[in-house]
Image (cartoon, rainbow, N blue to C red):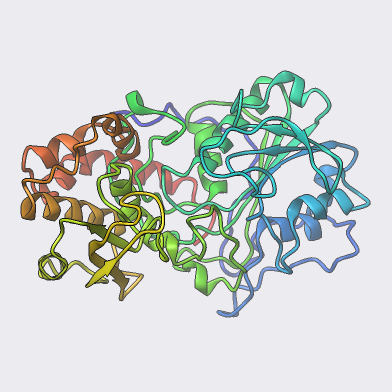
Length: 429
């Protein structure tokens, strides 16, 4: 399957240079802050997010322009300051509007709940909802804006709605001749983990927006450039890159503070478990720790034998992971107030761990051990499961008894083609 249209070079983006040079040619700054310099000679050089880089080195790009900002509480600088407040209070930036995605600008809305337009109580700026009547900025929302900035922390998987919002923002910017700027942030899973099937575009949705694998190994800036070029969107796009980030780095190696990206992703380590059990949780026949103390770290139901499941999964010798038998009672969500039995997942080697593959093995093992308990029993959830899994092939493969190795082989050609395209847009080594 052809993943994208042919390459177009109509877009400005900032590329990562060799390790013996600065990461890019620094624009003369007009900030009173000392510019951040790339120092690749030091392995412990601090990582800076796009917001820090913008304010120290790229302010001229905003000179004389009315700015809109798409953001949420995860967008903080090195000193824990929120991007919306930083831009609003900066004397050389004219921030005129905020845009809120799922959970809202300041994170005060529950997941899945629609949001209306409102006025931000701290800055007094209008907040336009991109998770209500529309998910794409309209002409009216953009009429007083010269450049729209996107700054939100991603979790490294295809199904997180924030990168879908970014796609809508890029499209709207192109349609209404507004510049768009992406402030890059690290992929907490690092830049090397690439696994899973490619999204079948017949199943494109807000849950899965791009023809990429479940774990894509890219930053939001890299995805933005790839989407804008390969799909020939044609937006006037600028990516403000990270400083000193390397593809091998997981979040804990960046030294950056973590802000919960959503209520059930309280710690960066949660992103390790999310691509493993998040897919299973969509079926609502298995509790995955949501509603208990450790979201995405558990697999449990009233009918599982904890020791049997733990032994069966550990006998698979999956890399970088161990399963411990547990018994617990969820406070809310699936099997609320019922005694559940199952496993807690321990990542023993985060660099070798393959979370998406591990999740497939968990589903296949449950189906084998408990044929009388259909994990796909909730028919209304099957459509959502297809959207999360990027098509019907995984459901059909699991229910027909295919091995996980057979499933992986079926999507290998498309994954290899994606890898070739992805290589052109990697900004960091």
